[in-house]
Length: 571
Image 1 (spheres, helix red, strand yellow):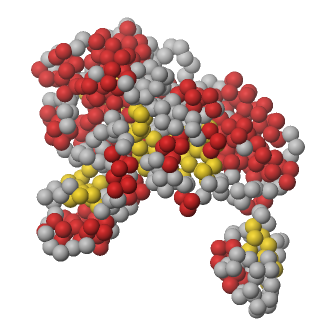
Image 2 (cartoon, helix red, strand yellow):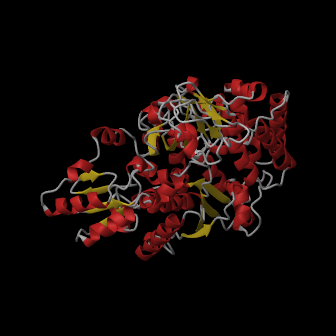
Image 3 (cartoon, rainbow, N blue to C red):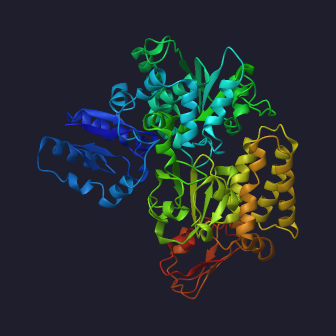
C-alpha cells in the first residue's frame, strides 16, 4: 500500500516530519510529495487512495492500523467532500504534479510524461517553431508584468552572440507569496524541463536558477533533481544523442527583494551589489556578462512543458482575451483556507476568496485584498467582482504581481497596511535612486506619524505629491510601484486617513496610540480585569464599577480580552 506524506515547507512546519517518522516506525513505507496547495489542512497523508488531513501523532497511529486492516478510527481524519471538490474544481497546469509525485524521484516525473516536451522539441520542432508555439499560447511572464514570453525568447534568439544564458528568477520576495517555493519543492523537474526548452529555443547551453537562500528545502530538492537529470543524460553534453547540450547551476540569492528585478538579479549573479541598471539594452540583448540572456520566473517555466505537449492553442483557450491560461495564487491573511490555488484567468477576486479560499475567518466582513505584493495595491470589497487579468487589475491601481493575494477583513486598518508595505519597500530599496531612497522614507515617516495620532492637515496631499514624484523619477519597478499601496488606500479608504488625522481615531481599532479603553456600567466588579492588567492601570472595589487610568494604560487589550461581560469598550 502506498503511503504518501506531504513534506513541503508548509507540511513540515505543521508537523509532517514527525508524522512521517511515526508511520515509518509502524512499518509503513512512506513516499514524499510536495505541497498540494491546501496548506490549511497540513499535515496531509494519503493511504490507499484516501486522503487524511490535519494528521497528528494520534491520527498517524490510526492510519497505521488502517494500512494493516485493523479496527481504527482513521476515517475521522478524512478530507471533507467540500475541500475535495474545491481542489478538483481547480485547473492545474503549473501545479499539475505538486502534491501528486515524489519530487525526489525523477522516475515519477517521467511517468507523468516528464521530459517528453523537450524530446518533442529536439525531434520535431525547430527553435523558431517552439517560439511560435509559445506565441500561440499567449502566456505572459508570471513574475508580475505579464510580458509576452515568446517575445523575450525571440529577442534573445535574434540577438547576436556565441554564448547565451537561460536564467530562472526564483527570488520570490513578496510578503505572502510562496508559489515559486512550492513549485520547486513539489515539481523541480518541470522547471528544469521548461528551462531546457527555452535554451533550445534561444540557442543556449547554460542555465542558472537564482533562488532565495531562505528556501533551503527548495534548493536541496532542486540540487537532487539536477543531479538525477544529469545521471539520466537529460542534462549535459549531446542530450538524447543529438547536438543539443545544456546544463544548469544554482545561485543562492543575496536576500534582497530588489534582486527580483531582472537587471539587479544579473548584477548579483556577476558578484556586484544587486542594483538595477538602465534599460535599454535589455537582458535579451546584453544580460549576464553582457551576453544575450532570457529571464523568466519559476511559474512561467513550469507551464512550458505542458504547453509544448498539449499545444499553445490549448493553453490559449483558457483565460481571457488579455490574459491567457491559468494563474497560481497564494492566499494568505484573514481567510479560512490559506494556501495555493490555480485557476483560469478571468475569474473574479470574489470567486477566489469565497471559492477555494473558503471566505473570511470568523465570519467577519470582507474588506479588501492586497494584490501584487508591496508593489501592488489594495482592492476594496466593492471591486471584488473585478476579473483577474492584467488589464482589469491595473485599472484598479493594483497589479497582478507574482500572485500573492493578502485578504483583509473589517479589523484591518488600511493606513497601517499602507505603512507596513511601505516599510518593507524602504528596507528593500537598493538606494540607487534619490526618489526611491529618500522619497519613500519621507512617505513612511508621514504614515508613521498618522498611525501614532500625530497626523497633520495637508499630510494626505503631501503623500499624493510625493507618490507622483517617486513614480516619475525612480529607475526600476520597485521604486515606480512602491507608492501603489498608499495611493490605492487613499483612493478607496480616504475616510480612514481623515479619521486618523482629524478625529484621532482608528475605526479598525488597530493603531494603539489612537485607542481609548473605558469600562461601561456592564461591569460587575469581578476584578478580573484589574488582576490581569500588567501595569495596574485598573482600579475599583469588588462588585463595583471599575475605572481605567488612561495615563497608565499601555493599551495591550488584556482587559477587553478577559472581560466576560463585554464591559470594556475600545474606541
